[in-house]
Length: 246
Picture 1 (cartoon, rainbow, N blue to C red):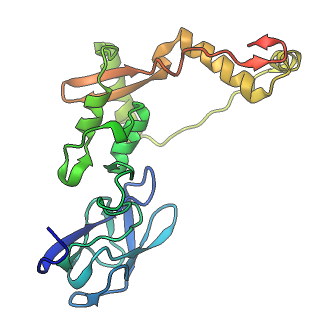
Picture 2 (picture 1 turned 180 degrees about the vertical axis):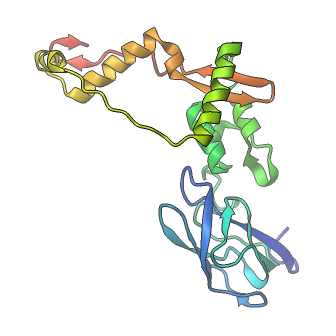
Picture 3 (picture 1 turned 135 degrees about the vertical axis):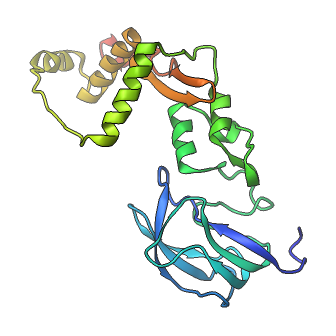
């Protein structure tokens, strides 16, 4: 629909305000139902566990409906406001620019889907979106990540995962620390003339080569749970040192 068409009821949804954020709390409204708003006029402020952000209007028109009251917590993607006006978007926090202005903006996906894509090493810009408004869905990411290397977990693994998930949801986290004598590693670090960080990375690489299951992601698919190994991470690339490859 062109920008010259008559008024229509337009939905503006809670934007993705940061990687991994799934919800935001309305801390104040700057408009009320019936108010006329201009393009980029502040609608409200939203608070996440990272920041409080003023949200500008993507449309000019009359406020027809508010998606929540002050103090309400809304999920990312939930309707924030409905405006009767012309469909003409501006640049918005978490949304990028209008499709006609910038075709290189990042793919649209909810934070849980972005998190899954990072875990499965899927480039969202290479995924064909199947959701409404060209939003990349969880199924889209799973389809892009599907490889012959995906493993079906054994019955013991599946039961262990179920019990660990259950205990995590009902039992408070407990933390423990262990002191390790690293004097031999310090001597090795000095002999190789590398930093502790580089040495640690190399040791982790060796461990993951021997125990690849530690470098895998548990994925719940429509066909049941699968184990997705990340072969590209544990390929053991040598680290250059003054004395050669480590």
